[in-house]
Length: 116
Image 1: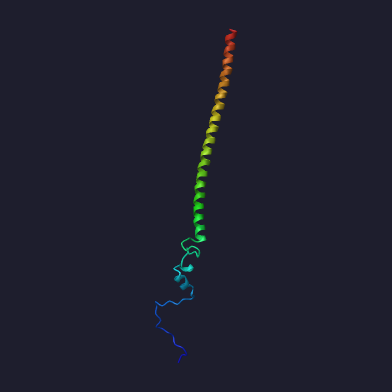
Image 2: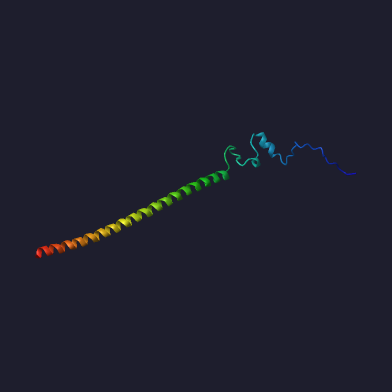
């Protein structure tokens, strides 16, 4: 015969508490810290530091992404403008060369007309 008996008729709805802290939090109307990820002993409605940090990181990452996209657009615009400036400088150089040739031709024609 065994020295002790097992209580096999234990009710399933009956919970055993490992500590009395759960009842203390229950008495004050707050959730136990292990039951809630947003629990804060100073302000129970406030989010935890970790959640605030994650939220700030997400916002920072979004802002960084937006700034990177804006930076990329500005770099592309800068490249286009540099290309336009280069094209305009080439056109100016070409027109200057043409003007010098025409001026030389004009001087030759004046000399020919003056000698005749």
